[in-house]
Length: 162
Ligand code: ADP
Image (cartoon, rainbow, N blue to C red):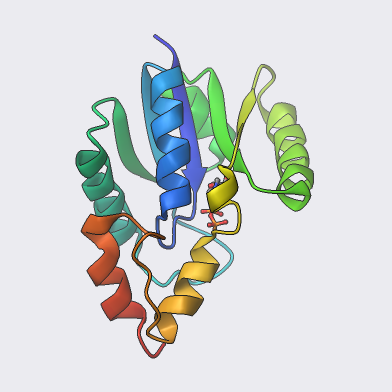
């Protein structure tokens, strides 16, 4: 069985994230979305909220081989624990590529045999980030189309006037 990890902050989960996850689900038998718990920054949504929102998106998209879990440890350890053969990441631009190359080297140092599979962002989504969604929602802008339908209202309500 080919297992992959899709890690990130997902603060919040966006249509860009869902697109990468759906494509990863067609490449691998099982994909674990690893929700980062101890990031450098204080997240806007708690780890449990982020997991619950991703689970709602997984059901909405009908992805039967995707699962959301919190991860507070090293990504390489988590990948080993899950028996994953790859870690999936999305690439939007050259800045993402530079960052991912360094991350891959660090994880390969920790876990020989570690592999990163990078999927290119869809052109219509390569401007999209969780930060852009937070900024638009904070000013009460329309985020439909930027985040999956089942989590649109909770994100808009929580982030308005933040
Ligand atoms: P963000 O950059 O939106 O804050 P994360 O840091 O949580 O998201 O990223 C998790 C993964 O999703 C990373 O591999 C990131 O490159 C990827 N990703 C984020 N937004 C997009 C997008 N619009 N299209 C494709 N991949 C994306």
